Image (tube, rainbow, N blue to C red; front, side, top):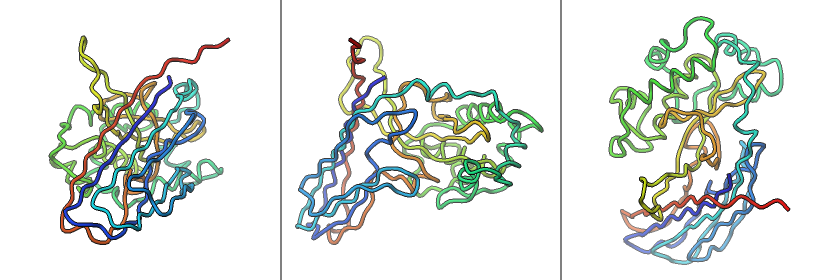
Length: 298
C-alpha cells in the first residue's frame, strides 16, 4: 500500500513568543518494511534554523528555531510512504517460549539480541512493577510460545480497558492506567510494554499513523485520521513483531511507522522550549492519511 500523510499542528499563544527551539519526530522512517518516498516539513512563520538528524534509535529528528516574535506557529509534515509486503511476513519458525526469550535477552550472546536488550530496561514513562507482572502472568504460562503469550496479553488489554481520551494525559503513570482501566493508544502501548519488561522481555514503543475507514456510504472526512501508537516485541533469532493493543491486531497494511523508542518521551511528535507566550496556549492537530493508487508497472 502507498500512503500520503499530512500532519498539521497549530499552536496559538495568548501573548507573543520572543523565540522558540523545537524538535519534531514527524517524518516517517525508512526501513526494510517501509519505503519513504518523499517527506517535507513546512513551518509558518519561517524558521531561522532547521536541520534533520538521526537520533539514537535511527529516527529522523527535525530541529527548528523561530527567532522572530510570533503568536502562532503552524507545522505541517507531508510524507509519502510505501508499505512493503515483507514487513507483514515475519517468519515465526524460530519462535521460542517466553522464558527462553527472556534468558537469551539476559545473556545477549549476539549483536541483535544485545541491541534489543536495552528495551528490557525501565524508561522515563515505562517502569516495571509487580502489579504489571501480576496482570501479565495469566497469559505467560511456563514454556508457552512468546507469540501466543503476547497475543493473549494484547487481547486482554483490548477487552479489559476502555478507550477514553479524557481519562489520561502524557504524564499519567502506567500503574494509574492499570488501576482505572481507561486510556488511549499511547497508554495501552505503554501498559503492554511495561508488562513485558516486568517479565524480562524486550518491547519498544512505536509512533505512527493508522488510516481510518469511514462508515459505509459516507465520505471520508478531512482531518479525521489520527496519529497512533502501538508496540513491538523482540523474538530472539527472528526479529521485531508489531502488536496493536488498541485494536487487538497485528499491524498490517494500514499502519505507517514514524519512529520507535523506549516510550513516548523518545518520539514525541513535537517538543521544545519557548520564551514568552503567556500562561496558556491552544493546540489544534489535524491528520489526513490518504491511500494512493498503486504504481502501474510497464
